[in-house]
Length: 89
Image (cartoon, rainbow, N blue to C red; front, top):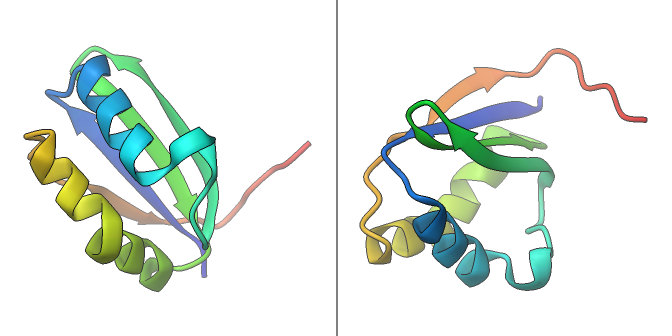
């Protein structure tokens, strides 16, 4: 089952770019990621992702993202939701 992840909080574009460049150089998506979007929000910077499964998202966090977030001093906690519909062009 696909899972959605939302990070939205006190994050700057510089922090976002630092993490993105470390975990997805050249914008190459990690295994299991179906969708990624990032941009400014009223809270700072928002990232929305869709993963094939919660396990694939957790594996990416454990192996790469968690450490990159710590280096960038980002402490925003993700929110997870079950994805019931994905529309692709």
